[in-house]
Length: 346
Image (tube, rainbow, N blue to C red; front, side, top):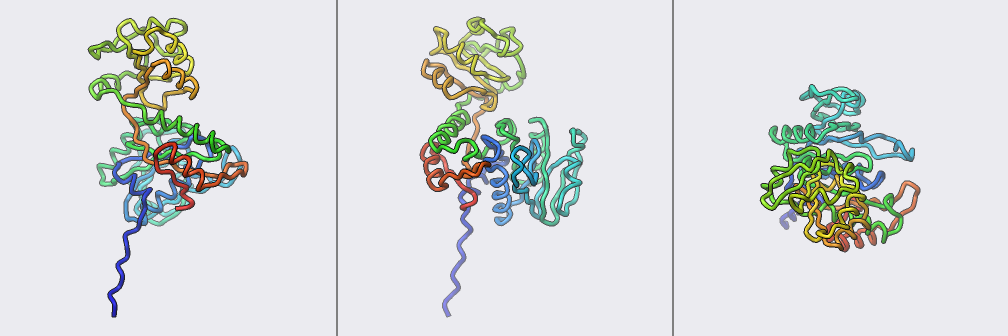
């Protein structure tokens, strides 16, 4: 009798990409780009692989009905052994068996934050921490308890959860909800990916700047920081040239706007100027303004570069329009030079 054929290991290329990281954010370019579908896919595949994970959210995720379009939403399914954090209110509404392992003394509008372990598979709504500091502490706590990977679900139409100060890596969700035109979808997604991949300043300078939470700071040639006297870049007005008295690098802990970029682009020393943002989520700029700023010689940098591991595609829009999944994935992958997955197809 012939020997039984060995069963090959389960191939999960998407999952393999994220395993080297201790934390991962899943963020959507818009609502209805498939974040929750992506999260459910990863939770299921990681469970099948035997990898213990923790999961939480900033904002609320896992609702049964979309609050904007009134369409059905996939709920979040949690498996045995998974740790999760949610608010006291939503913990009481869970549809699974679990045991509480910790209660955070810090309260939210929805009650205390409850950490629990799933004992029997079921569904839940996640509503987690509101600050990056709390999220970072939670990730550290999970890692210290031996959990190798924490998944963080992003909030509606915001990329702030993908901040590298919160998670080590991110997956970006895009799709027909961003644009039903494939060319426009590729262009918009490529722009966001370009911001995600902005270069980081040297670690020594980054360490100095990370403690500055407000103001506008000019950095001289010896990496010394000088307070420009402006509480925010939004208050600069027409005094843009005054920002660069001590050097050609500017650190902006808060929002970087289109208006500021346009003003700085007109300065005679633009080719020597570098604007430093805390991370790409602080850049509220359009592709056109960014392209003009770069064309004139201006540069952008961040304190810490983000690691974009993959892009997920939802080819269907809430209005019912559907992109050709295979064609869209191929076009995005070629433009972004990244793996692109329709998780309903893998």
